[in-house]
Image (cartoon, rainbow, N blue to C red; front, side):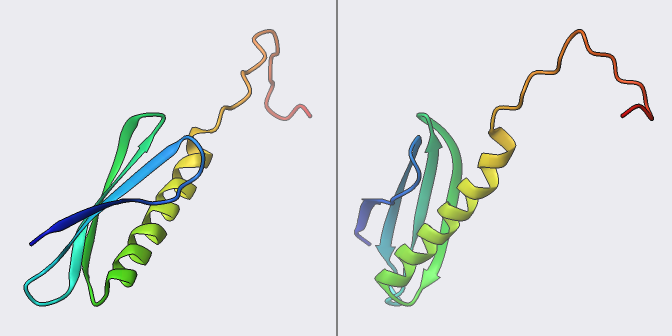
Length: 91
């Protein structure tokens, strides 16, 4: 099986590549890796797809989903005000 490595479009700060191979049964399968700011964050297994295009589409959808799920959790949060005291029930 020959493999081909392609880059997948993802938001700025992210990188994604996929390696696809044609199986002996004529389907396509592979592995994708997502990295954020140069650090590997996720490996995606692309199960057998009937066509080359559907394998790339599957990888693109899964990568996009991972990035969307990652971003809100990793966005900077405002630092709590060290001098503020919160009393339950106070508004």
